[in-house]
Length: 360
Image (tube, rainbow, N blue to C red):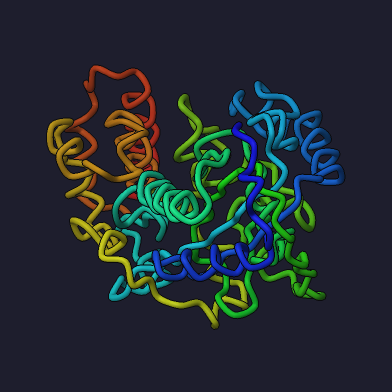
């Protein structure tokens, strides 16, 4: 990293400017954190030791670089943290979609365009504004794109606290927001870390369909529906399939149940608006998408990263969980000879589920 401009006399004033520039760029909040994450590192290492990360090998691959910002990007002394609301206005009521077994539920964050590039592009613009004001400085922008303990850093920057479901919660904005970071060598004054306000509430723990939240701030990803439908590339454990319901990409139950989300703000970003009716589309219609249609309709979406076979795998499970329907049986039969063994396995399971319901 480059050394900070020696002519900067007032870092407090610069920090104030950075927060103002961030707001002008559309971020809902900007905060500044130091790089010390010792307790969070211990929590991370314990989580990894218990193998609760499942097949997410990348969580362990980078070692402590995730919890030591200067090891990831040498010279880092501060982290500028930002948040950006994503809850799309006009989206169908999430609980109503989850309650309708004919529909597919997609996590609210994935209904619009992929956030990674959007957040990073704005962070780059923020860095450009800083450069215009003080000259070249050392930085690197991230948005869930590198080994970063973003929630811990955001907490230390005053953006919220880590809830019992492990999501970041802001008392004025709930938890429906993306995070981003600008690692920097500028010795800016840091903000006061947010304190916990979950109290005795356990709604998120109790509502989890698979009981993946095994204790306050203790998530066993191997049971989490978001992990099972997105991160897990192979077969979904048979005992967990009935618990997934109609959630075909991610799961928002813990956030939907959180009382703090009554303060959540709808996104004002056109990029996060619902695309292709994915806020409550028919499972049968989604299951009929060819790979070409899947790629076309998920272009620019976070959903595309799972690929067509995994998409079909997830929907097959949801169809297997639905009440018996001749239309579902026909849809499953249409994929019974799919080239992917993964798809065939889950279609066969779903067909057996449908058959058992018809005979009941």
